[in-house]
Image 1 (tube, rainbow, N blue to C red):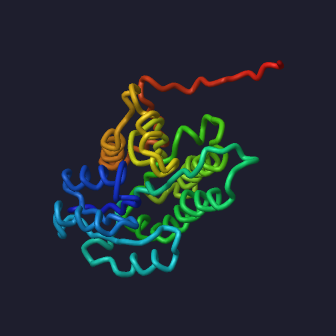
Image 2: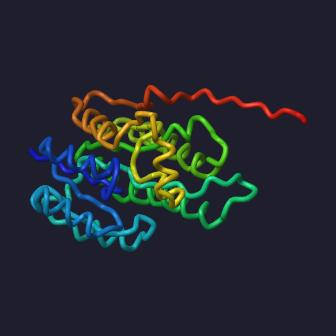
Amino acid sequence: MTKTAFVTGATAGIGEATVRTLVASGWRCVATGRRKERLDALVSELGADKVHAACFDVRDSEAMDAAIAALPAEFAGVDLLVNNAGLAQGLSPAQEADLENWQTMIDTNVTAMVVLTRKLLPVLIERKGAVIAIGSVAGNYIYPGGNVYAGSKAFVNHFTLALRADLHGTGVRVTSIEPGMVETEFTLVRTGSQDASDDLYRGVDPMTGQDIADMIKWVAELPPHLNINRLEPMPVNQDFAGFRVARNT
């Protein structure tokens, strides 16, 4: 039986790689995102029988409802939810941060994720499916300027583990994947600067969207009696040690 995945943030990076990887492995995918032209390109490339494009902003609950209601019958039986959509905005310290940036991160990374998860839980329970959320090492190890982004990813990490507890006995598997540095459009979106993005990743040999997509596929295709609670991948050239001191002058 062909299984169906619902992948948010599928227009670039980890989400796009996940759609390609799952389709190549025999899945159908509902690919969501705001950039219709990119979703249409995925459908054109991979086939309308394999990919259904659902173009909406995850922060718009009514648009989300409409997209779910409009799923064709062959895509409506969701077996896997990949909560990938998310973003970071700004690197200013909290006392200088833009409140609009903070609200956008909360609305996207937290509110939209929990709303979509709640809407799809009945079908996931019915089909004994799986939920995979893309968190971040930023939810575990704090860095200057991370403030609300780090807080939102801590929420993603822990909400996913909390789902695991609540779904005990349902057969639904739940996993939090919490990557370190992955070279995608993440830093470009955060800073608005391609140069800043290039500088961050230069010489690091960071992970790629494909690396994380391969992990998602592995977790999704494990036997149904196995659950991976959490994964925390990082590139070899990045680590979590970052204690600093401020010196009096």
